Image 1 (tube, rainbow, N blue to C red):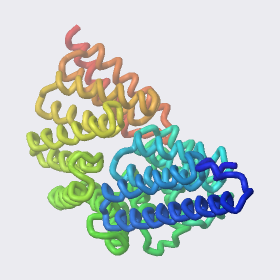
Image 2 (cartoon, helix red, strand yellow):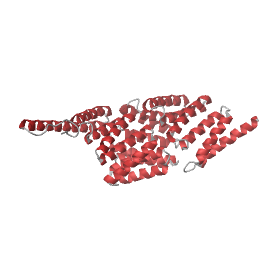
Image 3 (cartoon, one colour):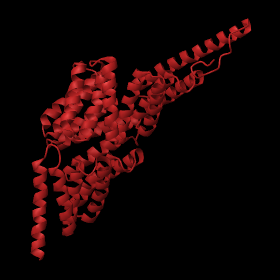
Image 4 (tube, rainbow, N blue to C red):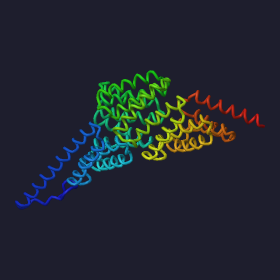
Length: 425
């Protein structure tokens, strides 16, 4: 017979054979205990922010379990998920997703429903980080539904998946859905001062700044920062994330020097803990560049955006939404310096990414069309600019939660173009 897909046990018979079975079972038990101890050690390393070292220990634990149990055991699935989460923290989202998919396959084959729910949740989070928002939404919805059914609606794991789903909704510009998810997650944690509560508050703060409620946003992010500092080790990614969010909230209020300080703090933490090439380092550089640009320090801003773009292209791929964000800001900086041809090229590439990720009828695509239209108009490419801005206006009018201000901006630019065309004729 086979021990859960691992070593083959001899059939029971003579005393010698029975002793061989006992020795083999004892050996497997010792290996599993060793793997369990290794996972606990790896978790301690993560707690101390030693993620690269933790990854290696998780890998050894996985290898031991595969050797003892074979490739299809639920304990192997657990090791795959642990290692996947560690890789995700290190910004290795594609590798993480592959491990979580393998864990999901094992749990589904074994009909281990709680493992299925856990693996689906991790897979959704990895898809979110890769910018695959529609797939992430599907996985995160399934995780919330399964965990609620298996664990009850008040379980901390449900709050975690609600926060993931809220982030997906936010990225897809469903602010009502995002706010609902973050509020439900916060209600589950009862604002008890854990990192999941900090995530919920951070999410609510992000929604607030989209509503232009910058002071409320700052309040939420400062609460999240206080929790993260109290609950996590110095330099923890949750602290850096909250510092970043506070920086964005106060920059929206015009407090640019103060915002710059917060972003530099986050950058230093991320480089120290996660390494110079981590996607989060790219985010901090992008935020610093934005603040520098708003202060009129254009050469410094361009330099930081280029560094962010390079990191994101190398770590996330050339078609990730973060890459589109860098291209947008670089295009706008080029326009500020009247380098409109370069601006056009940046915005064309940005638009291509936005449409691929979100579809042609999304708010992000509308903004890209608007910026491209301006770059074209400033080069007197009036016919093409008019066509692009008309498409922008059409998209804006068809969006849920129609934004009259955005539509009015497109109409104003169209009026300018038509006046220019009339003067030429």
